[in-house]
Amino acid sequence: MRKKMFFLVLLLILCILAGVMLGSVPLSPVSVLKCLIGIDRDSTASILVNTVRLPRTVGCCLAGMGLAAAGVILQSVMNNSLASPNTIGVNSGAGFAVMLALLASGSYSSAVPAAAFMGALVTTLVIFGLAYMADSSRTTIILAGITVSSFLNAGINTIKLLDTDITVNLTTFMIGSLSGITFDRLQFPAVAITAALLLSFALAKSINVLGLGDDIARSLGLNVTAVRFILLILSSVLSGCVVSFAGLLGFVGLIVPHICRRLFGNDARYLLPCSALLGACFVLICDILGRVRFAPFELPAGVLMSLVGCPFFLYLLFKKKGGRRVNA
Image (cartoon, rainbow, N blue to C red):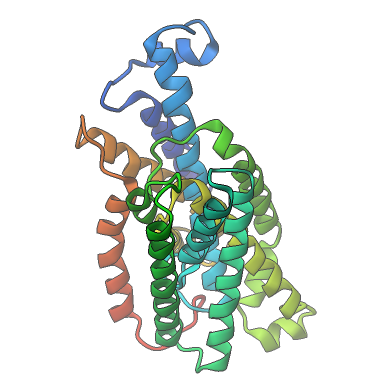
């Protein structure tokens, strides 16, 4: 287990270095090091590293960690291995709230991450409520998420049509991209995502108990309702904050938890941190490929994620029919 975790940490470090070094203008490790330690402050390389690539790399890490951890939480709370911020419409709820905040303020402000969180939370509660009122099967939850997501995406497009002055590229926002990120835009999301991750790690044992079923969890002294609600809030913070700066990135919260379950098992004490690490690597790799493979043009990371995620989602859908438990 420790060897696998060490490998993930090493992989993340390599991906971070590649994210800073690679692009339409490749930089040598020596040039990057000089820029980071302050020896080179005025060159083009310094501007490129400190104002473009470094914020983008940090954004990739935050996005991957947040979405992957949110996916683990949602799958555990909803007891559905197909649940993720993308598949059940949580990202769309956050995106709709972001568009409303931009419509009200006219530009990006500190209110945008807060609006994204509220949008994600309301959407999560709606889907969770629909699952309880219906038969709670795997297909029902996914269909409810698709329906809600389609409705919210229609709202996003309507807002953009009504106000063409909104300072966001709708196409890039809907696909999901890390281009143009600055440290100013990452300040609040970084704090919120870090805090939510730490709280999620602290609740790992409760997630394990919750996976045994509500009746067994109550018999073991767990306040199921309170823990479930707290976890839903944490997943909303994670996914909402990512949407506020990266747009509607998809499938990270679906693909990464499943890979980590194969590697590390279902114990949330290992699954959550390992999913966060692998999620950061996954987003970084997609972003780097989009920059390098198509240079001097750029393919948004969300496109590559969809190319990988859609077949993976269909594979899970046809392989695991019915409502089998996540931890079974």
